[in-house]
Image (cartoon, rainbow, N blue to C red; front, top):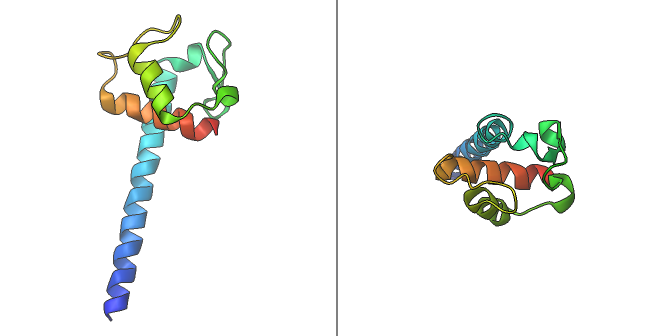
Length: 102
């Protein structure tokens, strides 16, 4: 009986983490397409964007930290989004871009 309890707790934890991960990816995609307007400049297959002003994210495959830094502080002609997006939104779009470009 004790093992069944551990099994169900493990399944519950995995299920809720999956939901949280899906929610983060959904929020990140929404920010990429809408609030952050990233799709105007960047190509990312998952988002259906094929702009060529900024780097093609499918080719450079940035990690989460690189995206957080670029979105927060800006880089090149890309403006800084600190103060426009919350830290949670920046993290979500970074996770989305990193996950979907790799």
